[in-house]
Amino acid sequence: MSLNLDPRQRAMLQEMGVRVWQPLAPVGDLPSAAKTIAVHVDPSSGKAGFGQNSQPDGALVAAAASPAPAARQDEPPPRPSHAAPSAPPAPAPSGHTPDGGAQPGWRLGQAQRLYADSAQAGGARWLVLAQAPPAALQAPAFEGDAGRLLDNMMRAARLNQDAGAVLFAPLVRQTVSGAMDEFSAALAALVEEARPDMVLVMGRLAAQALLASSEPFGKLRGQPHALHGFRAVVTHDAPYLLRCPHDKAKAWDDLCLAMSLAARES
Image: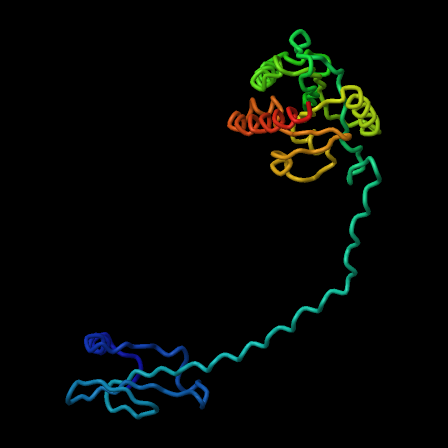
């Protein structure tokens, strides 16, 4: 029977649940190795069966299995690159950053004596070095919101009543050639003149610079350090505490540590 089934034959096969495939090419054009799958419909019983390379007696639907596509050849692996690895960047010269600019330095502001009228003879001597903006170089220590917070911190530590002397100096970060050498000399002179029982360093960047440490600020806090031979404690600066008031409790812990150490020295 011809493969061109009429609508009645297609409907009959569909009712029997027999799926019909149309060949992609005439059977005569298929390769000899292709197999023909035939659906044989028995005219007497109306039942359909499947056979391979069979000669049908009734309605027949044939479909040739397409030959398997040729296996793809794996592409050859990419050739390894023989380019020489890039050399590591040369270390920046002293006093300069890798991009050629000068390293950030520090400037020490004019020292101010705090609570001079209430100083107690025999009390601990304090030197407070506080990280501050450039405007602080020409401003009183307790000016502005940051200054008022600093005053509150000093009073909470009773430095306005119990200290023998409180010397305050702002630290301003600047980019000036040779600034660190000049700053280090000025700082050493100030510490030697003050001879404090306790140096309180306020500010993360200032603490790392003065202690010549790259340790995270959280590891520098909570322990005593030595600065030019004198005991020192680091804590947050007032401008930072205004931005992050949730860290005020940490600053109070630092002040308590500094007070206890200063009491032992005095």
